[in-house]
Length: 203
Image 1 (tube, one colour):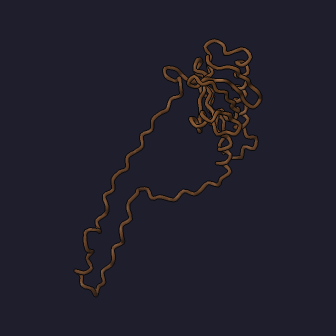
Image 2: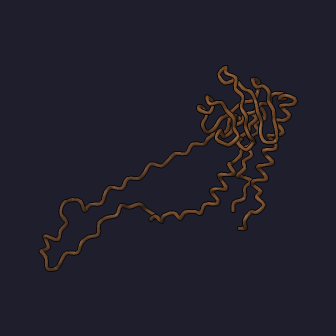
Image 3: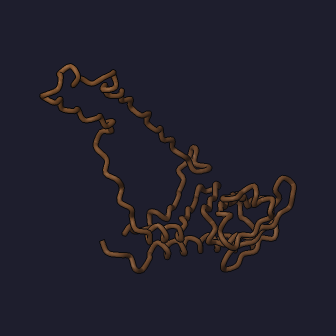
């Protein structure tokens, strides 16, 4: 398979982030229409994210905010958005670059976008794949090889001493049970979730 030199995955992701930028720009100018409201999850470790130290301690990796009723001074530029929110009756102001956005979801119409960490994906692709050690089809503990008795020795002395020659009992390992994780607001409806992985062409 040929290498994707155009990088369609990056272009698609940039276009979808443009959708989020346009929606928030309209909301900042005209307010949020009807029953629409937005759940926005973002990576708090991305460079450019501005949070208070209190929020950064509470959310060291990921944070989700809701833009519905109690928010103010929403401003949007080409690179990100800034908004005021109340957390446990404490007003906070934060800035989120669009590159940090991980998910955008509108429960009123069950529409969502998911974004992957492109930098992490590029780093993973650049690292050479490490060969996995070969394993036998069945995991059987290695047993000591039997020693051949010396023809000149006494046959009674050639017998193994003790009961350690018996193989250990092989017990099957418990299987891990996978549980399906549902997207927020997916109960009773059909979510329209657009994942970047569906557009990414594996090379």
